[in-house]
Length: 182
Image (tube, rainbow, N blue to C red):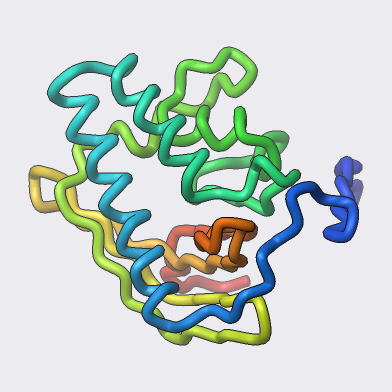
């Protein structure tokens, strides 16, 4: 079996500017950040329906800049419906392409956030807070305007920035495993 090589980016947190705030994180902050992410996704979807893709892209840029830690370096982002050779979106442009599409560098992205989402529910299996980092793992249920539900397995890791705001530094999402042999 032949494996393709993957380029690796190493992030040394001590070399990142600005440094993370180092404040402890509460479970309430983590849950609020997750709910904020869901609300933002629904707002991008609604903006697309009401005002078009250009307006949705402007909003998505603001969401990415406020929720993710791309301003400090790579984010470990593996979106639900991405695949090789663009599985991982460690740079802001890759995240934006995933959410709203329209980037020729990511021709298979059609804009996950542009789907007609009307509901987003988080069902955490666990929230783990260790020192200055919080991780979550569980399910996220997305409902479209026709009532169809898409459920994904999702893990997030959060740290605080210098202003004390939680930022996503790891975001992994995949469709649920439905069984079958290996």
